[in-house]
Length: 240
Image (tube, rainbow, N blue to C red):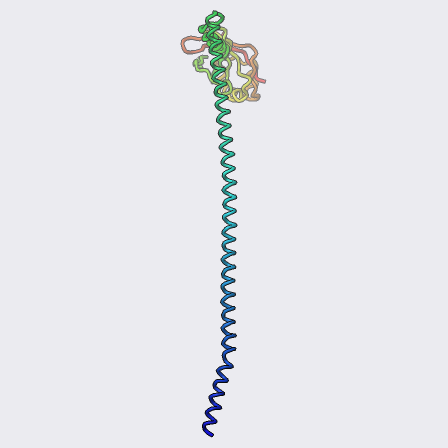
């Protein structure tokens, strides 16, 4: 009886062991499939990463090619510009060379001389300087009717009088009526700035009106470094 019981227990144990193998195999299969799935997924990720790297490389290669074309175009443009500048310089040198030849030919044929070329502008400058010196402008006179020979600018507020030169030592004196600022200043001081060189035709208007006009020009004579206006040569002015 006891022997039979032991046999049954052994058979039961063997039965349990034999029934656990399929479960174990299933578990192993699941693990294998999971591991295979992991490997496939990892492989896919690696492939995608490689594709991304390849795409970036293609982009970099395209950018490099674009930059290369741009640089080649710039080099070509600079080369053409350099050639153009060289051509222009050559043309200018050729023009200068031809002009020099023409001048040499003209000089040899006595059609023009270097002396005449040098003198002509100087003569023109002297003429202009002489015209500019025809009229000078003077500031306030001294009480004795004398002006220091120190001309001022026409637009200066102290350019009270205009001296139109007849020659180097004489000229006609008049009021610089074109300079309103100077006239306004001049009429504020009759005794100091007007009376020494002017005779006022209507003195009763002094202090009332501010405009001053020349009725008859006076005359100034250069003595040393001063323009002198004598009593008989005073200008006649009118307040208006």
